[in-house]
Image (cartoon, rainbow, N blue to C red; front, side):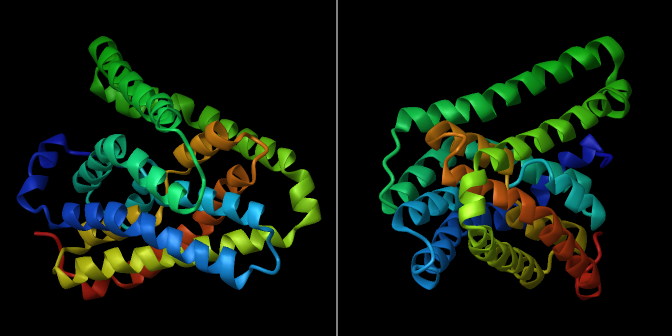
Amino acid sequence: MMKVDFKAVKEVGKNPKGLIVTWIVNWLIKPFTMYGISYLFIFILFKQFITPHLATQYLAGAVLLGAAPCTAMVFVWSSLTHGNPAYTVVQVATNDLIILVAFVPIVKFLLGVSHVSVPYTTLFLSVFLFVVIPLIGGIFTRMHVISKKGEDYFENVFVHKFDSATTIGLLLTLIFIFASQAQVIVSHPMHIIYIAIPLIIQTFFIFFIGFLASYLLKLPFDIAAPAGLIGASNFFELALAVAIALFGTTSPAALATTVGVLTEVPVMLTLVKITNHSKKYFASSK
């Protein structure tokens, strides 16, 4: 668990370059490169292996992943690279706020380009259910617990009470999704690989854009590391939840987002290793 000095959070605005890198990569580059790379592989390179219907659904799942930058696991990746905790908090917090206004139009546009018609009301409802309500619930829970038990209890005891439940819930969700996709997986086992290849390439590509941009801007390593990793990682909980809400639990789009979950951890651990080996090329924080 990252220890955050909330006094340091107020100082982040004095060096906004890392935030700007994060915003540009996550919202002006990542969704569109995800679409482009996934389309290239799914509709062109793997065209003879995937039917048009499945290809459209797989692309939709990839779009949902690309439009949802990480807001949770990035704390783990940042911690593994000894990233600046205060800066990481602000990067994640601002992404949470941007999701509220940017996720729907980006997904609507890219799904429209993919010839997938989705009502705005469905997308807005999904964001409200899976982002706004948990965000508000988290704020009020934090305020209530701190008022009753204190901040130290909240940070060191309360938040850890749900670690096991979160892990079990995620594993059960993955098992349920794969069970519902059993027929597709058994009939087309190679489709898992076809989906994973563009997702993995996209992850590496986006990481190096953010990480190299941070290097060129002469950002210190503890800011550059999370700036690169936050774009590479996905808010897969949101992507999976929206895929289920839009297309159904048994949809190929839900399968695509699930493959994104399975590939993310090993790929991100690889990027963490690359990041740590690159530390000598960056300036130290002042």
